Length: 238
Image (tube, rainbow, N blue to C red):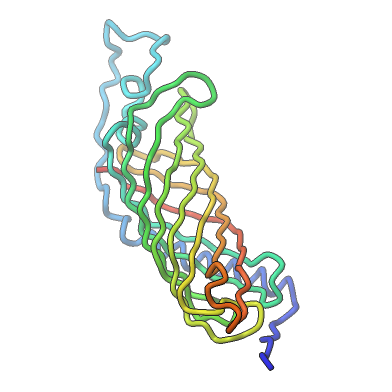
């Protein structure tokens, strides 16, 4: 008979532990990018004779935004998240740490609410498990992101989705993964806040599903893991 790993029921303590672990992971995540940008390139404050308030392109009116969004811009991001499982008796808490390379496929286009551009993301992930029968998750994810670049906005909203594969150490516990190899997909929504030329801070929410698609059955039980939580990242553009 499989043994269910009974975990603490104290919701307040669980939230406190998640908050502390998330803050620590966020601090560690930003260290590699702290010195990536040491100088801000000053833009001329004198208006050009041909400039006007009717300009429709951020690439000419906002040097900070144009340094982060545009065709063939490549970005490097350090991402940290704190995810809690949904409707799983094991009450998973884990901290995905991602290093992501983004490649922007086009210039800013369209008008209205969908003004923006498309980016393709390639991510490597390692997620230590703070609470739950598995010690860790590790793998790779890739997929598109759409950046909603609006004129005059201090933030750039985004919507993304990634798919990929995960490895874990399957323990055989009830309501967990039935084997080490799993599939995964994520959905994310949030906003990017340009801080200086080529550098931005991003804040959002991530949902992740991890499952082996029934490959372990009937020999071992497979219960998909659904988790959601905040994600914080720093981005540098090349």
